[in-house]
Length: 170
Image (cartoon, rainbow, N blue to C red; front, top):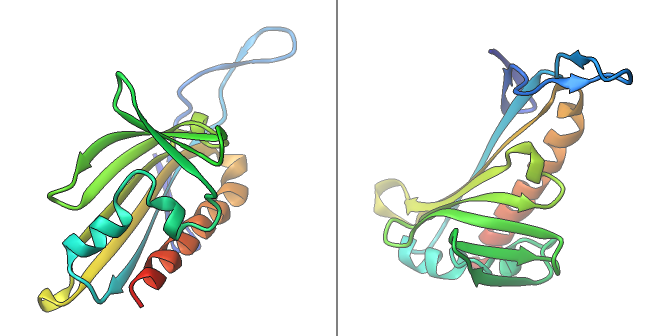
C-alpha cells in the first residue's frame, strides 16, 4: 500500500480488488485503486446538541450544502436512505448516534457510488467546553488515473458544506 499527500488530503494507494478484461476477453490487472481521505473542520459558537439538531438530520443537508436542492428520507430494510436532488444520489446511513452527535453514510447511487464513497459528520464540544467543532470527512477509492480529477471535487463539496454549516451559526 502506498501513501501520498495531495493538496492536504491523505491518499492511500490500494491494490486493485478486481481484474479487468482486455478487448480480446483476456484478464488483465485492474488499475491500482487509491483511497482519498479528506476531513474538514469548523468551530461554531453553539452547544453540540444545538448544532446537531440543526445539521444532523438526514435532510438537514439542504440547509447547508448549496449543491443539494432537495432531499427525501425513507426508511428501508437496510436503514434510512436519503435521496438527494430528485433521485440523482442515494445515501444509506450506516450508523446514526444522535446522542453522540454523529452519523456515517455511504453513497449507494450517484456519481461516486461505485467508488466506495463513505462519509462521517460529527459535532463535538469545542476547546475548553466553548462552542462546538463540526467535522465532516469523506473517503473514496478511485483508480490512480482519476485522483487528480476526483480529489478537488470532493474537497470542494466539503469546503462548501463546512462554509454552509458555519453560516448557520454566525
